[in-house]
Image (cartoon, rainbow, N blue to C red; front, side, top):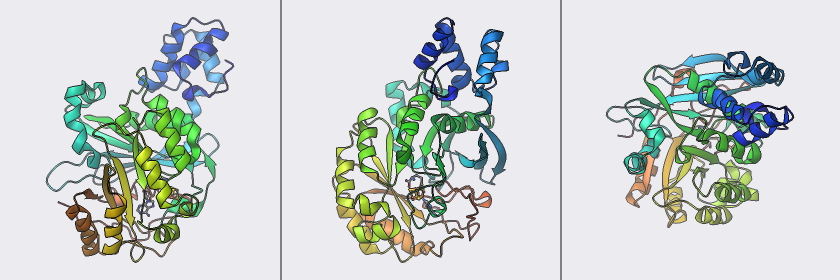
Length: 393
Ligand code: SAH
Ligand code: SF4
C-alpha cells in the first residue's frame, strides 16, 4: 500500500487510491475506514470482513501500534486522564470530561458551550445529537504536540518546550482510544484541542485530524462540537477559517487585554500583537449564532486587575464571544498562581455587567491532575493539589 499518509490518518478517498493500486476493489476502502474510525478497531486481525491477504498487508503498515493507553487516572468527579504512549516512546495525555449535572454545575469547557447548542439540535436534525440523547455527554480534550514551542509562562507544556509535533494519526488515535474507554451510558459529544501543544503550530496534522474526526463515514463529530484552541497564530486562524468555512469552533487564549501584559505572559504576542489578533478574529467566518470562546487564565498580579477586565470589555466590543475565566492552576515550574476567589469574581462581574457571557471554569479532576490545558507531563507536577474554585452558581 503505497501511500505517504499513515493508515489511521488516511481519508476514505486515499484508502481507495492505495487499495486500488494493489488490486483491491473500491468498496474495501470504506470497509477499512469504518473499521478504524467507526468501530475503533486498529488491529487488522480483527477486521473480519477483509481478506487475509489485505489484513496482513495492513499489519505490516503498523496500523495497530499508533498509540496505546498506558495508564488511566480516574478522579472522584468522573474525569479520566489517559496517559498515551506513542510509537517512539513519547507520552502525551488526553482527558475525558463527563458533563457535570446538578445545581451550580457550570462546566469546564463544553458545558460553557452547551448554552447555545442544544436548542439548535432539534432544528437541524443533528445525527450526533440524536446518538447522544439521554446519555452523559463527554468532552474529550486532546493534545497536538509533545510539549509546546510557545513558551507561555504559566503553562507546563510551554515551560517544557516543544519535543515534537504529533501526526494526524496520533491526534485521532487519542479520540479512538478515549471513545473505547467511555463508561456505559456515556457518549462522546465534544472534542476540544486544549491539551498539550499549540494546534495551529502543527496546522497540517491538526487540519487533517479535523477532517477525520468530522467525517460522516467515521467518528462523525459535528464540526461545531469540535473546538480548536490557539494562543493566536494569525495566519493559521485565517487558514482554519478558510479551510473549514468557519464551522470549526474557535477558542482564543487571550489572557490579557493590553500588549504589555499579554507579552509578559505569552511570547507569541510579540509576533502577533493584540490589534492584529483582534482583526483576525473579526475576519473569522463565524456562522450566525455562534461565538468565539475567549479563554482568560487569571494569574495573580499579572492580568487580574479589574482595570484589565474593563480593557477587555472594550477590546472585545463588537465580537461575538463568550469568556471563560480560568484561575491559574499552579505548576511546579513557576512561582505564579491564581488570584484569590474574590478577585476572580470581581473580574467576572465587570464582564457580566458589560453584557458578556462570562463563566468561571471550574477545575476538574484535581485529584489526578487532570485539568485540561495544563496536562502535567515532563516533570511539571502541580504545586498545589486540589485547588478548587468555588462553583460559579
Ligand atoms: N496551545 C493552545 C491549546 C492548549 S492550552 C492554547 O494555548 O490555547 C489550553 C488552555 O489552557 C489555554 O487557554 C491555556 O492558556 C490554558 N492553560 C495552560 N496552562 C494553564 C495553567 N497552569 N492554569 C490555567 N490554565 C492554563
Ligand atoms: Fe503552548 Fe497553549 Fe501552553 Fe501557551 S498555553 S505554552 S500555546 S500549550
